[in-house]
Image 1 (cartoon, rainbow, N blue to C red):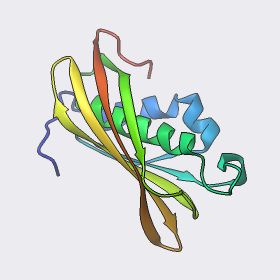
Image 2 (cartoon, rainbow, N blue to C red; image 1 turned 90 degrees about the horizontal axis):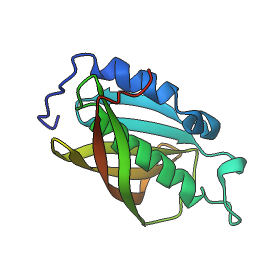
Image 3 (spheres, one colour; image 1 turned 45 degrees about the horizontal axis):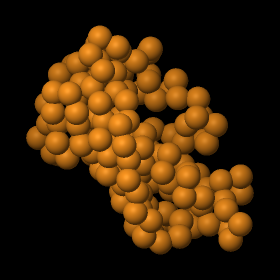
Image 4 (cartoon, rainbow, N blue to C red; image 1 turned 90 degrees about the vertical axis):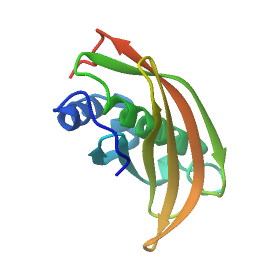
Length: 150
């Protein structure tokens, strides 16, 4: 546990409802695994439609779930009437993603009033073993009065 206190007592339900409205996550086949204050985990099964020409998971798939994991970890700390928007996201690819699924574990590094800094570590799971394949860091804007449409 990271010691963050959510400003919305129903943060988990709100994050889950907003994730369910993410059409792109649905298109990819991503699933929200867990939500805690300042922390979110997303899993994405690797299938041929998400692979690049060498048979590895496309970096765009890793980037997408990293963005959502870090962004929703930020949203978990926001008030009920606030929305979240990614300002920037940088990703370092460490190893090819191969196996059964990608897992993004997002967490808030610093929770400010207007901007939050988050991180997501992405792992490829193959036969029960995880390989660290990417590190993403980003900045997320708090949008007052613009709650996501849940």
